[in-house]
Amino acid sequence: MFIYNVTVTLEDSIHQDWLKWMKEVHIPDVMRTGYFVENKLCKLVTEELETTYAVQYTFRTMDDLQKYQKEHAPRLQQEHKEKFKDKFAAFRTILEII
Image (cartoon, rainbow, N blue to C red):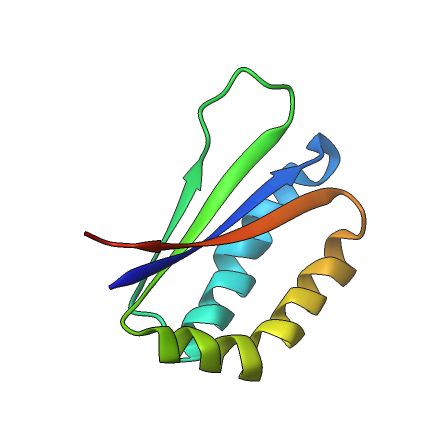
């Protein structure tokens, strides 16, 4: 099993709207693709002024992730980008569950 981890740092001006949209729209849309078996939304505990979240999606095989990235990720990432413009920074990592 693996985790597709998306780390997102937000400006305060979008924090509450982003959190609501992620819970009600984006994460459910990602899960509906059928490539992930579980998700977690985690807030980083830090003293920094910016708010950072880690959105984690568990998947079974690298083939599942590759299909998701080809078939769904561009559209879903574009929706996020259009909604929150230049008020966030994101990066993605893949973790193997040991």
